[in-house]
Length: 292
Image (cartoon, rainbow, N blue to C red; front, side):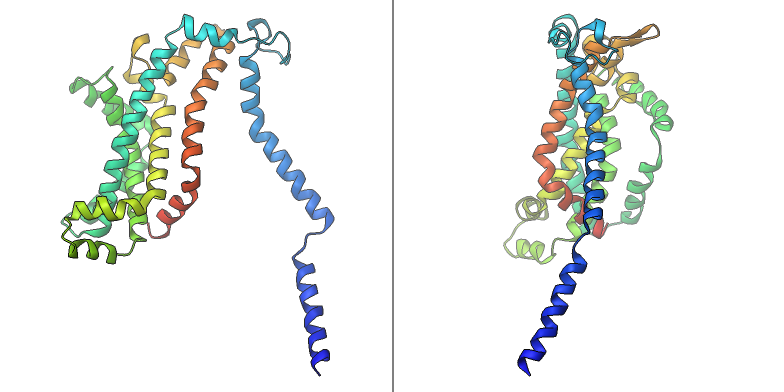
C-alpha cells in the first residue's frame, strides 16, 4: 500500500516539473528576444560613445575605429565653457536633490500621519500639479521668476525643478510612510520625542528605499531638464549642461564630436547616482505605490 501510494506521487511531481520547464524552442525564442532587446537598448549609447572618439571628418560615418582620438574631449574642456556648465548643473541638481528629498519626506510624513484642515485639498493639489505639461507652465513660471529677479540665477532653476519633483515625490513618500507601522510613532512619543524627533530618529531610517527613489527622481529631473534651463539661463558662464549642449547645434549643422563627448561626460554622474540608488529603487517605488 505504501509503495503503490508513493509511486503516483512521484509521477505527478515529475509531471509538474516537466510542465514548468520550457521547451528548447521556447527557451531559444526567449534568449533571442533578450539579446535583440539588449542590443536595441545598448546600441544608441555605444554609437554616441564611439562617435565621441572619432575625428570630425568621420563624425557622420560608420568608420568607428578609424583614427581613434580623444581630441573631442580635450577640445570640449579647453575651448568651451563645459566645466562652468558642469559646475552649474552640479550646484542646481545637488540643491534640488537635497531640498527636494527633505520637503518631499516631511510633506509625505505629515500627510500620512496627521489630520489637519486642508489635508484633502493638499493631496489633490499634489496630484493635479503633475497634469500640467512644461509648455503650459513655462511662461507663467518665467514671469514669476522675472518678477522675483531670479532669472539667470541657479536659485530660480532650483525652485522651478522643485515644483516638478516635489508633488510626485511627496505623494510617493506618503504611500511609503503608510506602510510603516504607526506603533513606531507611538513608541517615540512614549520616549518623549517630539513629532519631528520621531520622524527624524525613528521613521526616516526605515524610509531609505523611498528616500533613494526621491533623490534619484529629483536629481534626474534637474540634471537632464532642457526647456526651463534654456529659457531661464543666458550667457555661456551661466548655462547648465542642457543649455550648453545647444551651443553645438545651429541652423547650418551640428558639431557631433564635441556634442557626443559632452553627452558621454554628462551621462557619467547620472549613471553613478543610479548605481548608488538602484538597490532601493524597486523596493521604494513598489512600496510607495501600494497604498498611494
